[in-house]
Image 1 (cartoon, rainbow over the protein chains, first blue to last red):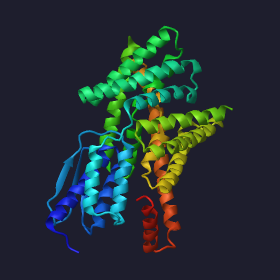
Image 2 (tube, rainbow over the protein chains, first blue to last red):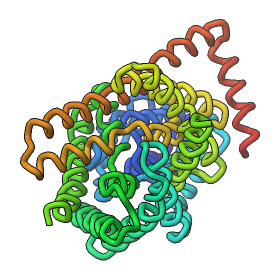
Image 3 (cartoon, each protein chain N blue to C red):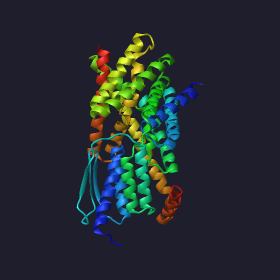
Image 4 (cartoon, each protein chain N blue to C red):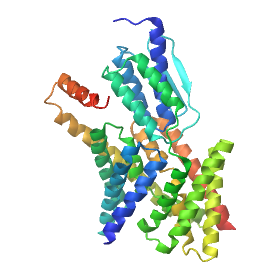
Length: 250
Length: 163
């Protein structure tokens, strides 16, 4: 079976798109590399090579086709997209769907927004913040304050992120808002332990996933990716910390 | 009673993070189960006097094992289940205290808390990776009896259900 030249071009675009969607949705580096190479091997392209970093992907199909690069500018955590791309790669590898169908579906996935409505997300962020009180020996009476602060903090981070597109600033601003609400709650007697309320409310913003992914990438030998993700996690933690610190210092 | 309360609230806590990270809707309750199991293991071990670093390691190890089981069961990538499962173990509170100590110019306590946060997050990541490697080894010996064609056919039969 020999493929035509434009088929190789489409195959390259298809694999690269799969990698791009996964990386933008926060998948681990080794999974992205593995998925792209598996898809390539299923199309009888045995000598494909890839180089994956959190900011860009290089994929080559050997001598058949010129090498292509894609850059990755924004990274969020969207597990639904990762699982969808994973499904498509699995189906392509088992030859249940053809390359054309896979490419069409990937294009559709890239355009669609799979997130739940924003008010559901804010509600869950609030509930998560108040549950934190029980898990870490907080007071039950602090739960309403954490509920409000967590929800407003999450709303702030999404809104500012949409308006400015600067992650550092939106996280700084959100933790500032959380700090002010928590301080006011304690000041007016609606809460008791300032520290616990603040920690619970910033939990939805904390880069826990990034930290563990960074360490895992380092252990898997992807040092560039590990360092880059670690730096991103450090910046996020720094943004949250300085936002809170501003309130505490005043 | 205390333990039941912890289980319930860690379930809700983790499931909420499943929503925030946009896990597929049918996987969200299982995210909660993963988190609740990991947290209760951590909580019990920490209660009988083991240090928090070692307890975090064991907790993350259990999270990764349960996540592997669910990932194989539902044919989804493992990251869906373990990302929210480890959230209760991640040292958010200690990291916050570190930042606060440093802002209050108490550098000694800041470094102490910072090292604690670093050790715990390292232990969590180590637990995840170790569990993954060990399950892979077990699965490899488990699958040795079959030829690759047999396991390929089995995988194909399973995926056809999802069509």
